[in-house]
Image (cartoon, rainbow, N blue to C red; front, top):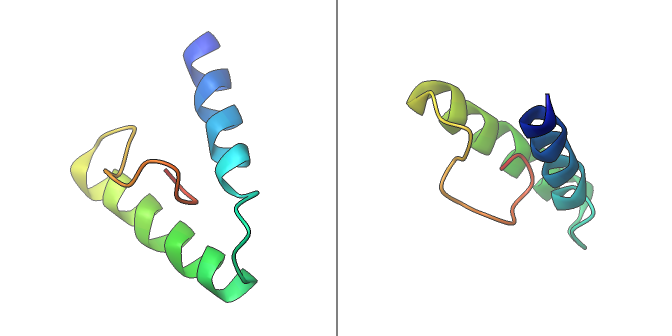
Length: 51
């Protein structure tokens, strides 16, 4: 459960990036899709929304 909590904390922190909302949503969708396709907990773009 601690790993899930850490992942969610990082996910929410990455959404605080000073980017316009359309860019955040685009990066969020792209990075979450990469995580699902690769079956990994990280998309390979640390610090971006959705990673």
